[in-house]
Length: 99
Image (tube, rainbow, N blue to C red; front, top):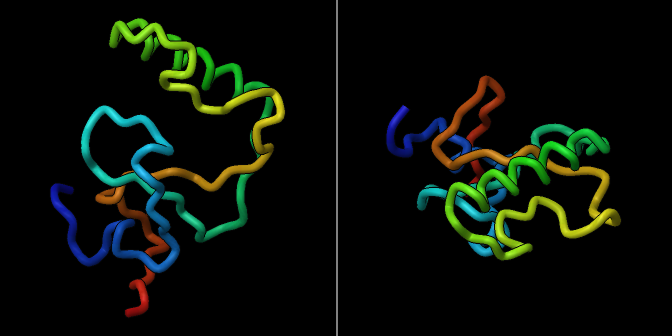
């Protein structure tokens, strides 16, 4: 689904755009948190996968900075999270944002 129309995440009442500096991206599409449901818990496995994906991204981009593509800041990172989506994503739970 290309572009943003009236039924995408960025137009939904449950979506909250995150600051561009809060989340590294490979393109300029807006990213945000879906707050339709309660936050999800993050397991140790999720942290391991996130660290591994960050290491792959650092390798592929040639960016060797330790904090580049870091998903969580430390072992004390939040144990819950809101699902992150791209603004032009969509789902079956869409509700229009209030003006």
